[in-house]
Structure formats: C-alpha cells, structure tokens
Length: 285
Image (cartoon, rainbow, N blue to C red):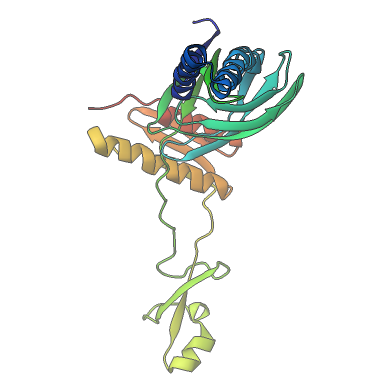
C-alpha cells in the first residue's frame, strides 16, 4: 500500500508568465522603462503568491467513498465522494479523480468541513474490482501552478454481471382468471367458458379468450446455461437479470450453476448472495 503524496508543478501558463516576467525585467534594466518595470513587479508578485497559495489550497484535503450497495457491470453506479478539509485555509476550485471514470468538482471546501460531491463510477466487467488512491488537483489562484495531492483509500467492490432483461412470463391458455389481462386469442374447443372475455367477444362477433399474466411462482430456480467465452458471460448476465426481476416481484429465488445449487429463498441478502456468486464465477475462455 502506497503512502499519501502531494506536489506542485508549474503550468504552461505559469511558464509563459515566467518568460514574460524575465523579458520585462530585461527591458526595464536595459532601457529604464517604467511600464516594463511595473509589469515585471506585477508578474513577479503573481508568481511568488501562486506557488504557496496553490500548495496550501490542498493541504489537509481528504475524501472517502460512499458507493451503492449493488453495482452492475456496464451500468452507472451513483454514489458520492465525501470530501473533508483539515487544512489551514478554505480550499477552492478542487478537481477530484477516482478510478473507473469517477470525477467530482468542488467550488469551495471550508476548513473543518465535510461535503458530499455526487459521483458516478462505471465498471465495464463483472468480478472483484480494486479501487486505490483518490487524487485532487487545483490551479487556484491564477492557474500558474497546479497543486496535486493523492490519498490512499484502497477498497474492493464486487461488480455483478450486467442484468439482461428477463422475458415476461405469461399464460398461453389463460388459466389464471384473476391475473392481469395481457392479451386475447380466439376461443378453442375445450376452453372453459369462464376464460371467455365477453365484452370483446360481443364486440368482434366471436368468442375471445383472455390471456392473463401468471401469478408468481413462490419457488423460482434460475439455471445458468452451460457455455464458454462470450456465451458464458451472456448466460451469467441472463441469470443476473432473472434473479433481479423475480426477486423484485417477491418470489423466492434459487439458482443452479454447474454442479452447485442454492435453494429458493426470499430476502434482499439472499438475492445479493446469488448475484455475487454470478459475479465471481470463473471465466471460461
């Protein structure tokens, strides 16, 4: 594990300002031009002030992550970076960088204050992901110097497979009279009369049977299809989508993957455990 670090470097604008200041000094000394002397003094003061102010701006700045409880691959994970300032001055115009595309900008961070900055992470793949240091940058006050600071905040997150949409489960024979109406079909010999949707039948002039959504099976077992390579990853994503969808509908969900099986249960903790098993499943090239 690395240690926290900080530094200061001159920007391109600072380099240009230094050259201009040197040129103004040369002209003022060689010709006695008062305007050149004033310009040299002004630029010199700006350069002299910028370095220590830029350094002090990030002294004592730190951060911690607040990540969502569930993170899915290829989906934006919305959380925040909680920034704090234990330094001697108010920090101004701070740009924050974290791993996996997470950034935040803070206009001002008072002394002894803590502010949450909305942040978005995006993980391309499933599995265990390591987050390391958080980096701060600022070019306050004049953009002539850039101060930077890194703080070590190592943590590990488990990224679940991208959930592919689970197909809607519907009745093809309208056996559930009390379910939600999802469609109609023509009456077939053997269909009970209680399946007939009489208002529609009267309107079209022939018997029509109502198709209704099936009730939730209290015991759902999701099977991960055997595959390799890209198809294996797709199987994991399809299982992720089914577990997510059925759990949100209140069903008890279990899973079969290879020679392992997990019995159906209904709880948020059990759902996350199943998704974690998918996230950590061994890759199959």
